[in-house]
Image (cartoon, rainbow, N blue to C red; front, side, top):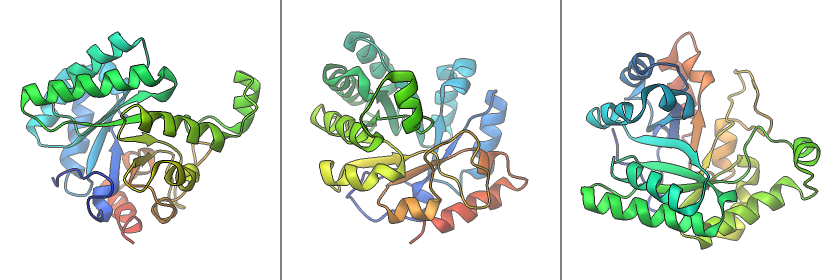
Length: 249
């Protein structure tokens, strides 16, 4: 597998931009997906469903396979607790991990320092730290109804992105629809990872703020996360290749 690259270092190839979500229930299913797709994609996302079932053993297995990992744990707690969790992740050699920007500047800074110190001690590359802005399942209507939030999604996303950068994060997880605003506030070297990606030939499922793979790159995102359009495809390898081609501009 190729080395994971940070934004601004070099132009990313299509498959390097593609992160496949291992949103499956067992380690067997996950490792089968990795074995099948590892030559077609750049990274694999390990989320809460799979991590709750497998724990850190899965991360160890993926490290043995030299499969780059985006650990989508979305840490959100007091700074000390998040620092402890980030320390454990940092020493395991994952390529990326994330925290919720809503945890605040102190929490983000603590996560970055703990992960960096742990990676240095373990003699592995420091993971890219991302902050989650607003989940892609949250629409403007949900913000108003459930949270009493009157600001527009874009305004909230850019606020959290700026907070994350000022606090030491390397980038954010955000909808491609807010990429241009994030770039304006945070610059071209700030890493942006975009979930909610659906090619035109796939269903939208439960995502609200989505774009196609090609459009996401045209708008300026660095990496895209794709799950069901690949993992539930009849031919998963072909689906991954088709999306990687869309990501190659």
